[in-house]
Image 1 (cartoon, rainbow, N blue to C red):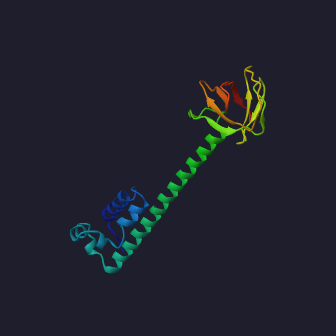
Image 2: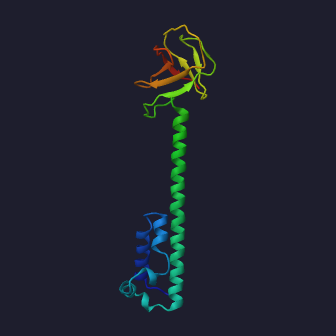
Image 3: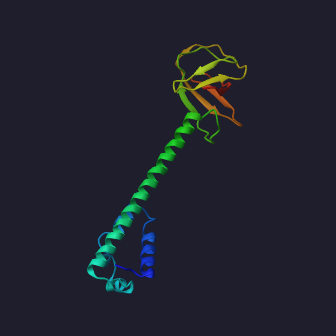
Length: 176
């Protein structure tokens, strides 16, 4: 079967225009052969009425293959985009406190072990695995077993530690 260049270009353009809307749309638009998809006037205007039955069948097979390939590409691209976003979110969550990702949401967890108060240089290990160090001389004497904590972002990369039940919030920096 030999198709003229304008006919192939027209079919390729029609295929290309029908595919970007997504995989489900692409499968729905080319369900069946071209003769079923087009009106008799469109079929004749495209010159497809000049093809023999075997040529038309070959063209339909080719078109179905193209649709299947483009559908698979669209699904792969969507899966890749989702995987990238999940990876990005994991990096943001894992590295909060080291770098500023623009989120103003506090980090909420519990202290692993007993809270013995505030003091410059003290380290606070959270249940989520993060470790923070107090950077200013704010002091508080207290004892509390595994209290809930919030670490709130401030301006210019500053973070504040708040322990449930206390209003004092010293500056801290993430060390691990």
